[in-house]
Image (cartoon, rainbow, N blue to C red; front, top):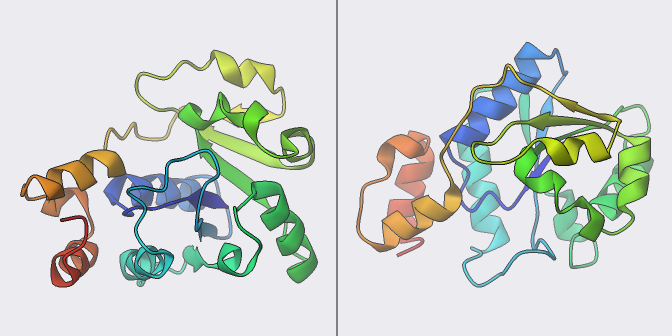
Length: 187
């Protein structure tokens, strides 16, 4: 499970997800598109359907990656523990592993029932440039995956650059870039 706003999904997300799917022999990586992260400002948040469409376009030819809209049908705001509980019931045969960036680990104490998440699920952490790894030691069950390529692309940068009229073509999958241009998003 790779939770996020994916506002928009970019090449860095895909590199990380593909690495985890193939490099760690996970059966599949699900991009869980979150309608609204309770810890983030929704001011720049694009409609969930646009974000889901972009994820689908980005991963359409990779069977190891899957777009997941389960949170669209759950009460808002979206809480990871509620989504995981829902998925455990809906897909009882699946074993869920969470993928998160090192920048997210420091926010875990603010999450609803974060101890249950940390205690009940395997959590794989990918390093993020300029983020300390010391928070990971607070949660012994987490595993830092050091071999993952360090990606310094951010959706915030992409949104800002598009607003400024800059070309972000090479930071996004081609079909996602075309979708953004065609629909006049982030302008």
